[in-house]
Length: 376
Image (cartoon, rainbow, N blue to C red; front, side, top):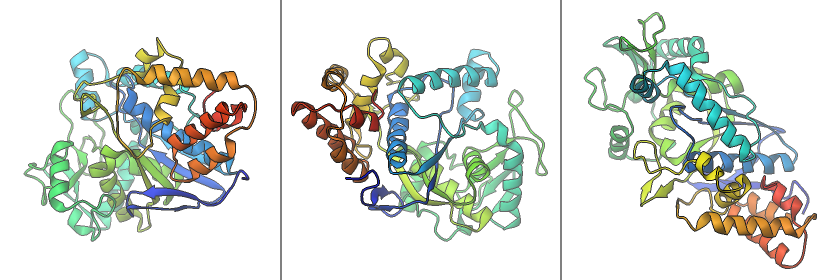
């Protein structure tokens, strides 16, 4: 098989099926980044390793990639953590971002084309909100600006969720559906008043700070243009974050926002989604103390990006043994054609890993196939 092969096919969340992914020579990608108030855990790593493997295969096929990964350095979570620790929120963000970047570098991630901070986009956010207001998709109430979801006929088209499901997820994921200033419980904040100890910026509609979803729209438009090829993140961002992002972006520009939506399934521990709020976390920095970062990366790739998986203590020893076998095989292109074909089939990491295992068992060197997966 040549490096370009046949068409790459990927699951599209919005269309709920596997479809050809056929971008132009330069692929524009946006992946939602971290809120830097704690260390990176395996759930984070799974998301970013997945998109890294995608970038590597796209480059292998001859594309250039421009992947933007934002840093949410101002929102409820980081402000609350900074208040708890008694530190400035930007100092907390800087320290945790440095720790995150160190973990991702150790895991072999291609550096982001751009890694903009939310606080760098205040001017862009103000202009964006102005466009949405002018087009009649937002309203002011209680010192805040809200997006009016009823002004968008296809709200819900990214997730495919019913109104009841959207209300449940909004309540669960910080949507504040009981806000009395909202015309509809699903309406969401574009701009909000700041508390006394929170950062505040002046705007035409009053002082305050951005809502959660607005930063990604403003940054994606600023860094990559009106329409981007692929947008992703963890599956927990499908709603409300990505649903709201699409609605407000298209309301502002009048153009399609994203051609292809791609989401990484959740990593679980003790039967629950691994998350900071639950505290059931396995930190990358802790795993690195005991295991080769390439074994951590390989352990992640052994799981299909669309299938949630459960962490347990047997995973790292198995991955380390596999890594040793691959390294012992020596130089060569064994398993490369099959690994390429697997990645082109909805980024099937497990099948790519199996193909490389087969080549190793046959006595072939697999350094090129391993490198395709980013495993040094």
